[in-house]
Image (cartoon, rainbow, N blue to C red; front, side, top):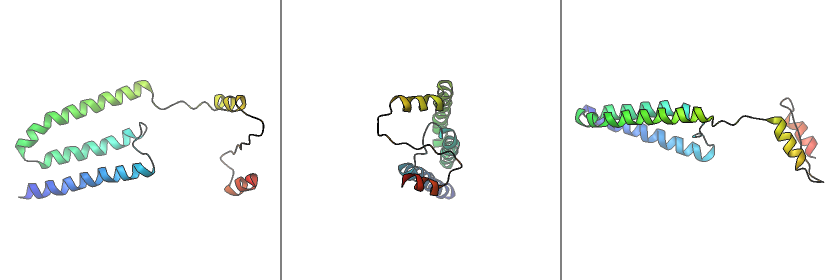
Length: 125
């Protein structure tokens, strides 16, 4: 039937999306707390579309699961926002830590954002 073909295609899109995220995550981690807000809506939409592709009886069973999924995501998002999982950058404290733990003979470079790669190579030579 038309719904089962649509469901298979949608399942393929969902599996491809999850596999793509997992593959990218191996090279460059994107499923971090900071990027959770970006990944969650797309994943939730795909889950909802997959549930709609199922026939009406299965969809009636999936509705409570989707509601539970939404509530749990809202709870996790609220918890992460409350705990402020993104650390506050304290450059002064970082510089003090480096100075306090500096050993004789240690070499480090400070480059501001305007420096070019050629200058880095010149300093390292």
